[in-house]
Length: 151
Length: 362
Image 1 (tube, rainbow over the protein chains, first blue to last red):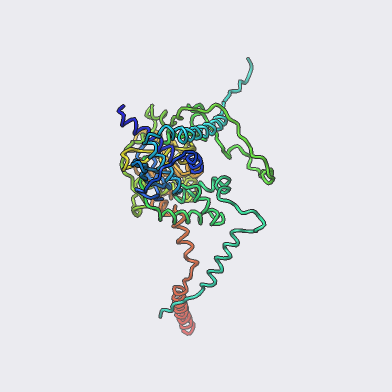
Image 2 (image 1 turned 120 degrees about the horizontal axis):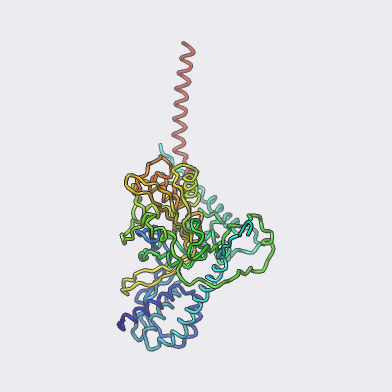
């Protein structure tokens, strides 16, 4: 894999994590980061709808299922990096924070940001998903057969 | 002669003030928060999101609160709101095969790989009122077990291996969008599925039930039903790659239907498909049955003249906002319309009476 492909994959992964993060948690984690740079808007937060698609039979041709709310924005931080955000829901401040993290992840401070914000967020998401999957697993049916009759 | 009538403004303002007071109910009773509605009326939230055709649990909670629990009114509020949203884009089709399932059952294979996972279901409850819920209880805690880590395979894939079920042909064709262009008949399957998934649960259920009772019978089995979270991915043009922009809870139902073959198709199983926002298996199963009934033409089946086979009938009456708008408008002032009806009836009566009197006289 080329370096640019690797950075693109890494960026996809943190942007995806940020889009689904709880606004309260991202705010709390980002507040712990010192020296947050000031930034200007390339695109101020905009609330809109994305039409979610499904596939017939789960695998066939696509159809339109319904919309979901999404907020997007783009910022440029003082050092010049541009951060984008597409986050689920209608929270403008949340989109701004996500874009700020995206921009900072492209600077020399990426490792600090990963430790302070992204890793804890990812761990929390994974713990929540695991806890739910564990409850589902407890409702899995174990069939048994009753043997009837002589011998 | 046309007489304009004005007035009623004070009455309307006062009616709305009283509505607000009634909405709040007894002020001695604690007010509901949106978080309470979202967390504890989750299935109402899901219905409002599915039929409002907008996935946003907080907005659905607000709509339910504002509408005093009238879900169709809440759906109306959501539909009105969504028309104000700029369309940012279209997602890639969601991968329900990699759904993280809360529930996954099959009525066709007992030992299906991935197992029968019941999830938080009302099935097997006794439907007896639980008076313990009237008391402030402790928060219940569910049991846990070792979670499954692999994707749960699709039941229809097993049948497809032997060629026993009709194949869904994957494509990337752009589907029509009824929120952008007016409905046209005949509608293709993509358009029918879009209309059904936002259709009224009661109406779609009634149509599905009619097929089970013999009006366009199509012998369905629930091949698979799954409920859980899927990731929503979208291409971001300014970045040149796709990212996940969120996750949604969906209910998916695939029916397996008996099919003895037709002039164009060999005997095989056929499919009906239901996919709905939120946890709503009644709606997803209903959607799958109606989808299958509406496919009679492409499968070369006979049109039995059943209501559920008539796509124009089904699709043009499935939307509860359209239906309620047209139905309820007749309670609004029609004074002038009615005046002309009144005059017409008086005239007809006068003519009929005159004719009777003339006959009697002769």
